[in-house]
Image (cartoon, rainbow, N blue to C red; front, side, top):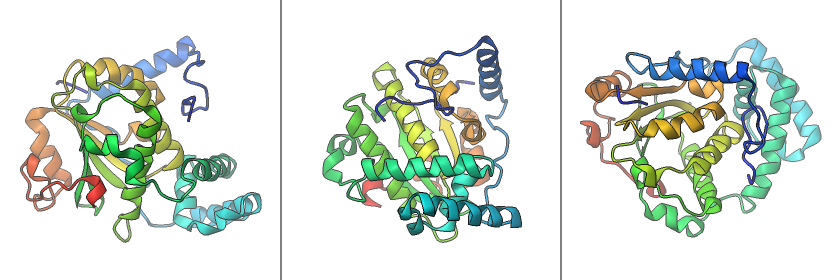
Length: 284
């Protein structure tokens, strides 16, 4: 199978530039990596808590966390309980860790999105690449994003970060009623070293994991060239365990059947044999 902020941080909060992995940590990451790329059908452990249903424990912890974060930052009053719960779930319902993560997010948002939105004029170069699209929903009602890796070019990192924020805000604002998550098809056909952007990949991961937790439902990585594995090995250690469980590499010969298992043909993008034409993310 052909598989698979200014100083970016690892999920554990360590600086990427200054991180030092112990032998035990390296071996653990290598075992996780092998497990990921050696799955015969490209599937990983099923996503947990992929539901809007509440349980009593979550309700109680959301109430406790809300009372705390609102005392620390009055802007927390503007968010709904679903957002509070997403941060809780991202930290395994640990109120202290989730609160710290959420308060850091509120501070980040004021700095990164001072006007409350990213204007297309701020990200014109990345939009011109026409690399991300949004169309249709999967069988769970989650919107489908399609991204083309071979259209990405390494460039101004600050604009790219603004582009990533724009995309995640666009997706979140267009989430169907009753949904919190989206699925993504990352198409790497034609990807080469000129498209490799480790710094950009890590920055994207950090924003997704730290600022938009529990938004990604599933990521299908398709048409994967062997040379991509070099970049993947460099990025993989910075993917948190919850996100790793949502990633699946799909073999070319199983592409259509794998996608149709989760997406109805009427909702599948036409580039994969479905019925819907792709719409650029900025036009959604």
